Length: 227
Image 1: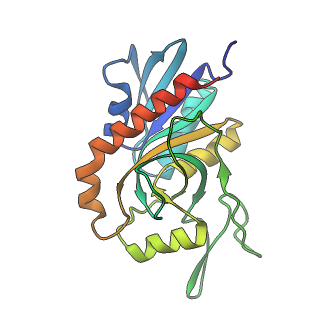
Image 2: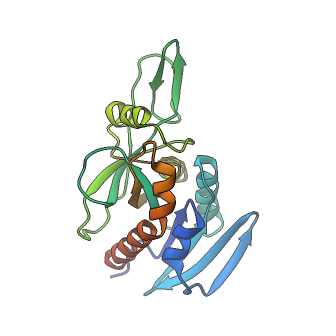
């Protein structure tokens, strides 16, 4: 039986995350504007990997390039994240994503809305739902994305309590929103580097390589089981 996901586009925010997945297996590397796009094979599938750069705009641009230029069947985000909740585990399959900095700034409060909707009137957040990935023994999590690296435990707690976030990063929800607009399924696997608090910067640097490796290995297992 032929899989409906024959060509998969993978997006990472930082170079170490891309290298953890690609290793030395790329058979070609393309330069598309400022993006370096590695092409490799896993079994009979073609995999296209791009290190987008940090942030939601970079991630959405990369998603659009993979969809329109490379005509991928699916968009996957792999890499690292900060941890917001007490959910057990250090590597997660993402089931839902929301943008944590989209909404309306009102006197004394920031009100969240579904990304792309009118930020006026009754507030509502509908999370972007991921394509289910095969069971590779990982817990599931909801991720919140924003264009700020979280080093404040109070802010992290707010994202957890208001949006139900287990993890926080700077790319996944942007890829999810772009995927919806492009008519593509999306999914993500994220491993944690820090607890989104005052120690985040040091912890991220110390744990980046380990977490990137965990996420990359888990994603490769999941791709191998896709039908």
